[in-house]
Length: 446
Image (cartoon, rainbow, N blue to C red; front, side, top):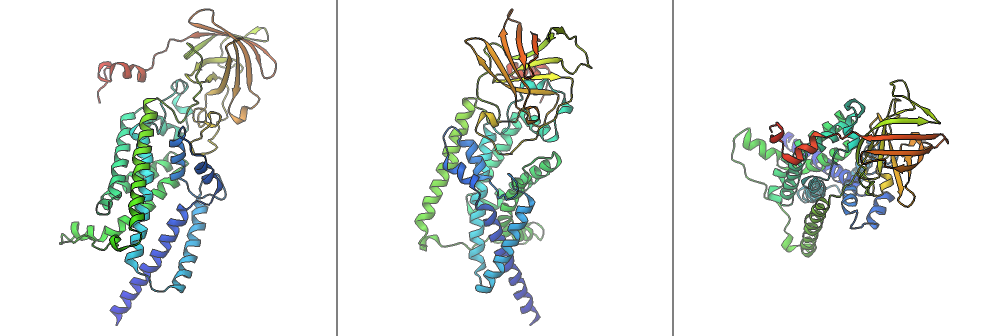
């Protein structure tokens, strides 16, 4: 009699745990926020990778622009309440069938995330190349999360390896018999990502948590059999229960769904990632081109403010130290004063150039300006994009006394007159030199 009670208690626990897990994962996965549908309804080929990544990693948020632990806790409470109500209305549940449904949902949702993130890494678009301004910034001026991204930027081969692991795991997840092998790769992989998010103070740790959560139904299903095989060294049969789709009315829907999934996430996302890589598109920096022939680091030779020449000094906050012109329409200036660092407004990749804040957020030492250049009258206007320096702007007449110098004459946002003579530093960067001749030829070994 006691054995019967134990079995009943065990089944009751499994029943309520399955209901809660199913409801919680589905609630976290079904978006009800307007911004998800704004992205979905405005999908475009130009921004397809950005849109797809934001859609597949979308998580519910009620109190902030990004999902928080409070959102997850609220959904967990709702899942528990609905599970109890469901159990009261339907006491007996066919555990195998509902667990099968949960695993199908988890496998395909997880595979969609891995394929989008994986292709963005296989064709290294997931992190940007290091900008010239970043290469001319002291390491200590970057915040922790920026350190991690810059490290990945400097090692694109490692990023490609990570992408291959994700794509391979996604393929394994698409087949019931190999799904367990897929999650064996993913749990330690994204467990490490979760720890890195925490250690480097990243804002996306709930995305990696969600990915690990999705992998648990598949992992737990075969965990007992794995232990019996490895630890007890006993003969172990694989799980045999599955839904007989051939006799189901959903048979055709299943086939159409599988084909659609393969077309969208393998062919469309894969081709778009390859195309963006070949065209050297960037998801982080503005796409507007910079000044023709003026790219690189420039020393500030002369700095004349309101008619007074200001000599270089570590105690003079108003004087510029050096200027960097990027290949896009960004100019950064190193100054003596401490910079009020801006945090990213959102972790989602934005479409518009004006919202792409990667280069100037989470980094000090330099002020970053978006510039507009009128070729007709050679007018260069600068606007500081950091929200703490909204009034910081300049309007210059740009000229080139020679091929190695740039002369700026104009005024700042306060109306002060300013004349700045910039001289090309002719600086070479090891990362660029390595790309030209190879790592071994410059004395480095893998």
